[in-house]
Amino acid sequence: MAPSQQHAGLFALRPAVLALVAHVLRTHPNDADVEDCASETFRRAIEGSNRVRDGAPMRPWLLGIAHHVALDARRSRARALARSAPRADEEAPVDPIERVRDAAPDPHERVEQSQRTEHQQRALEALPTDQRRVLLMHARGLGYREIATELSLPIGTVCTWISRARQQLARTLNDAEPR
Amino acid sequence: MTRPLTQLDPKLTWEDDGCLTDEAITALADGEQDLVPGAAEHAANCESCNVKLGETALFALALAQALETLPSHQLLAESASATQLAQSSVRSLPWRALTCAMFVAVVSITPGLAGFFAQLAALPTSHGQAFALLARWIARVATVATWLNGQRALELAATVLFVACGALIARLAPRPVQGPGAV
Image 1 (cartoon, helix red, strand yellow):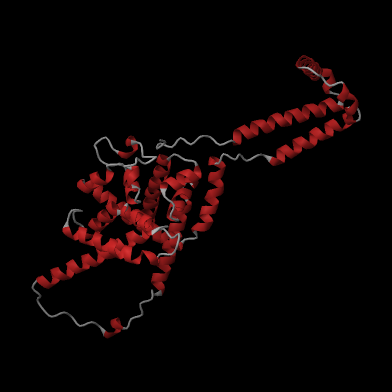
Image 2 (cartoon, rainbow over the protein chains, first blue to last red):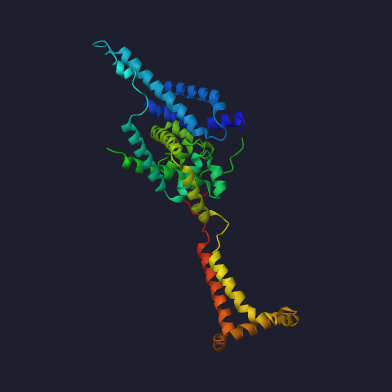
């Protein structure tokens, strides 16, 4: 894909990026911080777009950058708030063991991850076949129009199936989440 | 400015209260802005739609990340074969039934092959003769007594099988998709 086309595709996601950042920062999309985060997201995306392997979907990659940028901004806000608040005592020293702790997931986390993957797999299998196929084609990076053309479906049907599939997945995964 | 070839039906884009539908928000979260004209502007100024858009984008991201770890290739292949049956214009034929029918038809015609070349000379040369021949043949088949004759019974069985195949094909043929979002 030509870089200009690739960038046009990225900027089509601007409303989603703004909304995602606003959601993470728990603020209004017109907030200056949201705009800053969105600009930073697109700056990083354009700089790093040549590192994305050919054919890989750009959408999750861009939203992933936006998520990271927003989380960083939220942490910065929290730190700034903590600095401005009067502290009763000095910060507790960090346990040296914590400093050298292995960053790899422990066995318990690995079991949880494996269970989560199993739930996701089952939720995906429980989707109606057509919806699952459309969702997976989209996850592979195909746009709505490409899917509609490939399956000879109206564009509205593609949109409806993707929307319903995601809603059903969200419901199923929420129900499966251990409380 | 060029107008996009396809857009979502406004009924599928807007709720009665003027907010965006789930489908429009999904399209927006997936960067399909030109499918839903005016939706981005609305979402930027409507708090509830913007919150929904943020949630949808975040869920779409989480789902994309989860799908990377799942064996989705296999699922996609399975879905593909099932969807093709429903959607593809290439119809799947009941080959087993057709082969049986062809076999019965060939067996039934074999005794008559000896006189085939002799009959070639007597083939009708006009539409009138052809209709007369067809009518005679139908009259012969319709005569109940002749059905008990071995060759006629085989011809009849082959005919019945062909009709059954036709009914089966008609039943398996894909139906047009009537999604609520059909544009």
